[in-house]
Image (cartoon, rainbow, N blue to C red; front, side, top):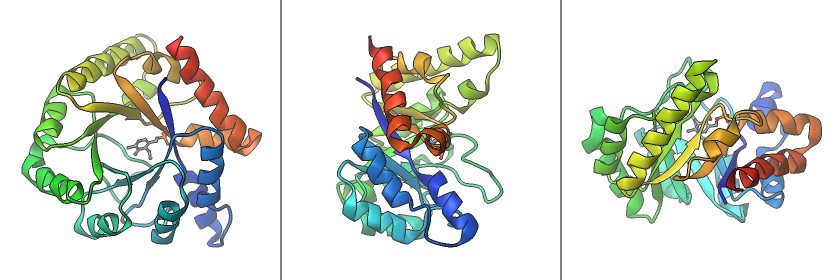
Length: 240
Ligand code: PXP
């Protein structure tokens, strides 16, 4: 069955709004694990707008599943990641003014730099995923850079309307097959929710989904356990 990783950044966003200790994203991560998530994702941004360094260290020490640290490939964050030693790093582009990660990483324009960065992580047994648009050139470049995974950006699919939904789904399918043929493992995420997940979850080559905003929003009303279980239920129905 396809696997669910839960991104807990939005719990930290709420905490930072008050500058106090609650709600605690690490507690949210533990509850998500208990409900069946097979991994936790958090994005240590350069501007530290939500997750803080201490959260990442605490997650590393206390998670029972796996930690996927989302990050920009900048020297400051690379050094922290090499010290934390997450199970996986997902390299993403980062802009100061964006509300969320807006597009995939332009791997094609920086293959040799990303190859060097990937090697530094591999030397510490940390797997590397590159967050890319469903585009063959970017996927080919991710393979050249030595990545273990690509995470396909599902944002355009999530934002599509009418006939464009099928078009975006077809792009994701084609990209997933292409990556799989290159022996890359395939994850996907961004903008996925309880309504739009099923068709993407039916793409055979995608192994894992990284979901944050919709799940954390739903958890506010129904609690983390139910929010995670309902998402896992969609993944299991997709496999049927
Ligand atoms: N994957 C990546 C690489 C992301 O940057 C994000 C957003 O933080 C997600 C998945 C999750 O997106 P969403 O919060 O829309 O579910």
